[in-house]
Image (tube, rainbow, N blue to C red):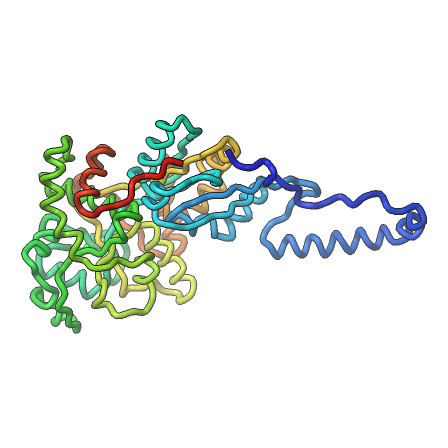
Length: 401
């Protein structure tokens, strides 16, 4: 459980002044009060929030992955401070969160169910406090550049999605079976004719993930690949999991040393030949495009998304590790301001369909809703997934504390 000493007053009351100073203070108090009111308000306003006198702040320590940006957002910070909550976070990959020590933390916020299930399973075995909240979700997608999307289109593996705004499409549907077959058959971008789009790349066609030992997105992508290569069905027994893992391992381990933050690298000016297709979350791309639109008055048409026709929805889990963090979890799930801001940052708020309207207000084409030709991919049970991860790479076991 978190340290109650981290609950602290926003302002401190001074002790009673010395008797000889009381008369002088009576004279100075009105002016001093005005100065403190004005300057204090200015300081708090500059910080992006306004606290009532003597309102108490509860500081919560959290460990989280790609959702760190949510708590770093100025509006989210302001809303939480208005409710007396200050959040301090440490960032790392979701599976690294799940397998590392959680001592000293009030909450964790892994990016999807595999890491969340691993945390809750471990803590339940240890009879430790765990409470799960699911405030929003975000599909797993593949981010790429237009030349590569069009090359996949030429190869019959991708097609532009319709109904997502005028001009060049930002969103493509990706046939996962055909895409994975390109990797299995050692096809290279130059083989597919990327030269027709003004580039040259001799690397094998594949999707780059973060380290599967650390990242929820990598584990989820493994689940998606396994689902696809198992005839659009979830592996349900350990023997079949071993067979699938052996089959898909070359699709994951030949990608070289993965970067720590693939989306940050993808969004920066870089050599597109290094990691032209990366596994990310939809909300990262949508928030990037909204920010780009604000700065440049247009969207970035060079960067586009590939939506697997076997769609994999990820549901981040906010896990309270003590009762102090339950209030934050409840705010994330039910506070209208936080839900609105989550939508502005590209998340699907559960039970609402506000993302399309919000993107249109921001001037960003909205991705079409999942169509009838798409299959909803599902993750295997935790034991099965962990078995496949172990077959792909020798990862550390979960911490016991």
